[in-house]
Length: 114
Image (cartoon, rainbow, N blue to C red; front, side):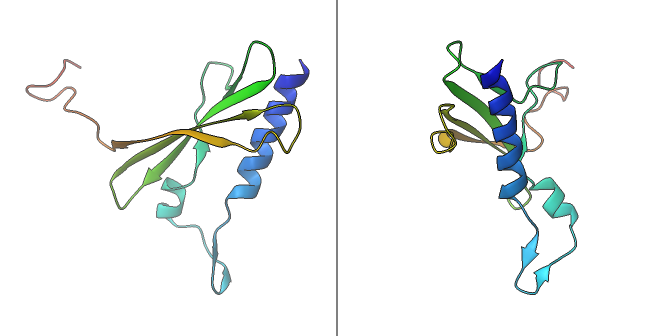
């Protein structure tokens, strides 16, 4: 399916070109904080699909995850774009969400059962 291959190529290109560890002095070593705060695609199914293509093959949507050390949590961003051309495929943010790193009190006294 052409649109799925196009979307896969696009997501890989966006990921590889968007993030580099650079400082004023040039390239620097990757830190633990850098690794946590690296934006990555949410894997959506058992086939390691990280994006969805609309039934008509004209649009895509992806969920991006990014750790936030300073706020002790996870940022989630949902992006979408068209698949007609590279210009149309530029991702547009649909929603930005934040959750604490430890979540709720699941499994703890007074929380949901584990």
